[in-house]
Image (cartoon, rainbow, N blue to C red; front, side):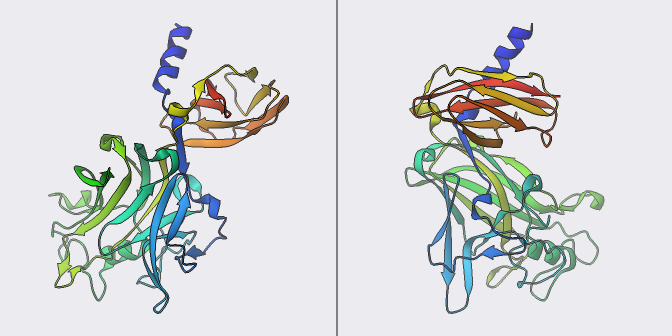
Length: 322
């Protein structure tokens, strides 16, 4: 029974080693800072994706995407245009991306991820629209209206481009929804929520577009901001590398605190650890003929996939954190 269980686990995780996460931590930003595109590079590279940015030096303004570590969840208005309403990134991280756009915001898949499946990402409200919807502001209404009965919503629609064509397939995520008959069920998202995008299939680019029930003569009144983090895409390992046998020993398994890897190869390799949903939890380097210890104290109990890969190929195994 144990062998069958292990086989099923390996089968269910067969695609995880082909994924990489854009967690935006590669920008090494200090807390309460941001990148708004003023460097003129036209966007941001992270984890096999490119986030477009349009910066206007004359007004020191931007549209598209920014990178942020800002934590302000109390200041209302457009001056607080970078903060997530959580006050941090997803899963306790510092860095995330914020979108501001009058139309669709685009994320391009790059490198080996082009044409691959996007597993999903975390989405949350930005502070500016969240406080606007809660309290109203000089330009936008308080959601629900004076009585709380107005059936308002703030909707994010995600579509894909493939081979230059925008698909009719879509994934919808409500950043706020006041359409319930029972007003106690009305909500404005104030957490990071995982949004599965596997239904979109193969993707070259993703299109994110906001819509709202609060509109005026110049378009949507609700501030057009939202935040994302930990976007998981394919990195092409499964299609370019072969399954090979490395000489290594992983112990103990199951384990409570630490995972030991005795790596007995003459060439260095990389390792990645994925959780059951495909999120990359850790990664690093294995030196040739080395003994390695990975701290698992921050991991929740459950099953994980260890992937060891080099230029020649990869190998994967399952371990359990107690």
